[in-house]
Length: 129
Image 1: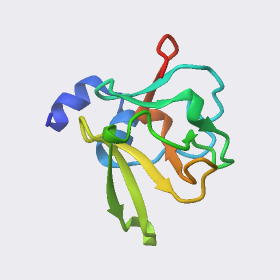
Image 2 (image 1 turned 60 degrees about the horizontal axis):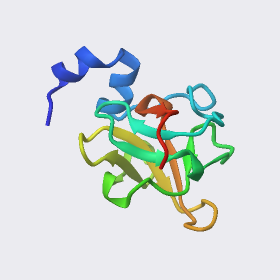
Image 3 (image 1 turned 45 degrees about the vertical axis):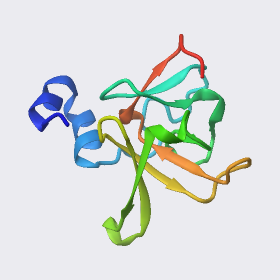
Image 4 (image 1 turned 180 degrees about the vertical axis):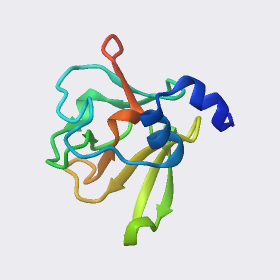
């Protein structure tokens, strides 16, 4: 796994805070929260394909939301008890970047809502899932 110095050289301070320090961007402020463009959402840090735009939906939360990852094997989950809550954190399995959280209040077919920070993603408009 790369060290903080590696990531500080490649990410903006805001991206570093979210991806490497498990920060959260403010709701309704991220680049992709209401993006309707087609493509594949990649990990901002390592470029791993994480989510397809076909699984993105408007959850009303102010963050990009998806009902499933591009492949279950690309996401790592961990229990998160910060901020007085019990949640499930989701991270990029390839590089460990913090992406956001997954909740069980999403739409069919999975019933899941992957609530992801825009700063953790980069949309590849030329890719298809």
